[in-house]
Image (cartoon, rainbow, N blue to C red; front, side, top):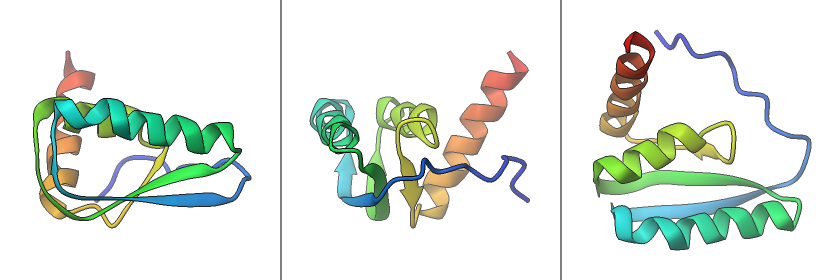
Length: 94
């Protein structure tokens, strides 16, 4: 059961950014440039993660903290979603 409220996507067209393979700290500045560029073009960035196989904690925190605020997430692998929920639960308990 997902306890998070249904996200309210800004009323603008979407652009899909596919992220596959590995996502690590060193990739985040480039990914953030893509996200910010989309927003500057008045597009809502949606990160499609279906082929994401590995990520580090910095990448996970980027995804977790940016979701529904800076971008949407689509097709998120179960292991990533579980880890994000775990991190959010830990943060709210602290």
